[in-house]
Length: 346
Ligand SMILES: NC(=O)c1ccc[n+]([C@@H]2O[C@H](COP(=O)([O-])OP(=O)(O)OC[C@H]3O[C@@H](n4cnc5c(N)ncnc54)[C@H](O)[C@@H]3O)[C@@H](O)[C@H]2O)c1
Image (cartoon, rainbow, N blue to C red; front, top):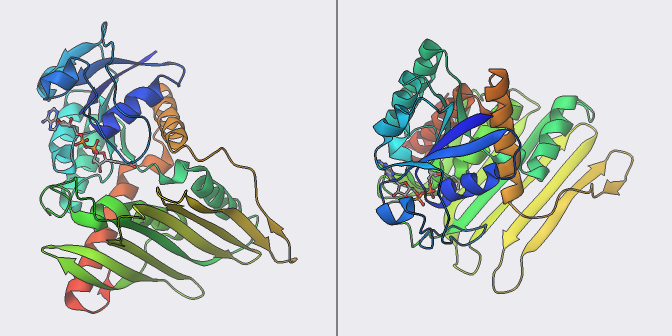
């Protein structure tokens, strides 16, 4: 049995806690949270943009800590799952690794590449696993695309366009703070940056146009520059009106297939979805059957991979700290490109 301690019982801490209940061979045996009400089991104040509303929880039998250092010192834990705000990721991760624990940390790995490098190096030195919560490849539509690309079934990968746009998250006061969250680039687009890194590799340069809000990019479109024939673009940021709080989508071009997917949350009208669609070079169009639209399914798949990795003491390639670091590098280069209004080498 893998024993997990979760640090930070907010939207993601709760999402992970509930997902672990659905995975065999793992048990949440400790929690760390600075808010005494949440630590006592009153999760009613927890809010997010999907999944269930927080409830009163029976946490009896779970060891509870107000300070991370105390949980790190708990000898009966194999894995610490860090769901703290992004600015706390490097310090918490390094403390847990040095304390001899494997670490799974939510995205983004850090707010800058230098911290990410320190985290990766600490894991190597401590001979512990460091995995970062890039959940996108575990969403069924993105998992399908990942398999379709890496299997070679549809030939060479030619390019793609990725979209992730939200309305202003008015309830998140730190969202545009570069020292706390990092704005749409590091909170939102980092998911696509990671996916692009995984399937296309690192580009030679990025060319972005966009607008700034204070110190962070508010919305942007980027061209990722690869050797031909690869053409990759992404659009992300905050611009949509409140009536459409979230959308994510892709078009991926392979030699023998085009993959299409578009999901748009429209609470007042009902969500608008183009389900994953595969157009093949023989003129056919298919809609592969995928698990339904509940996003918590992706977290169960992602954490299942984390548990397997810890059990086998073998890092998960998709959740590797190095890839998460590269995603932060791509975010940083795109910000630089918006600021300088020119292409920036990667
Ligand atoms: N993968 C995804 O789709 C996804 C979605 C949302 C958030 N996230 C990521 O998850 C992380 C957490 O985001 P969230 O939305 O759950 O935040 P949140 O604010 O809802 O929760 C953070 C919790 O950590 C607690 N906390 C803060 N500092 C602490 C400390 N020093 N010691 C103990 N507890 C502390 C807070 O009291 C709060 O309960 C972020 O990195 C975010 O980017 C990922």
